[in-house]
Length: 93
Image 1 (spheres, rainbow, N blue to C red):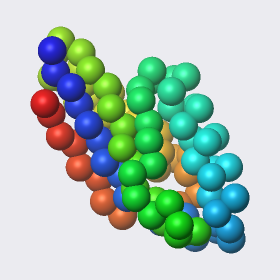
Image 2: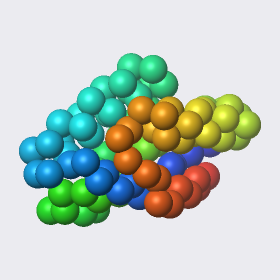
Image 3: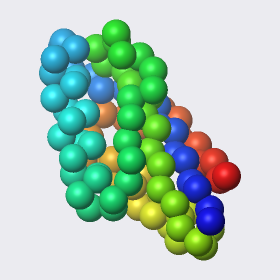
């Protein structure tokens, strides 16, 4: 079994409060979970209005499938989040 972990650091310039940032993240989390069946957590910058670090995890028996799915998640976030991905890293366990 291969576990894939995607770490995304995102700048959200149009967020003007923690409440607004959380609303955007909840919307993103729900969409990604429904579409890709992934686990999602905010890992850092919980007290920053315009920045977040997300951890996204999935698993499968084939590494190619895990990597492909996480690449799709990156593209989805790029297209649907009102912000910019500053860093993205994929790790396999």
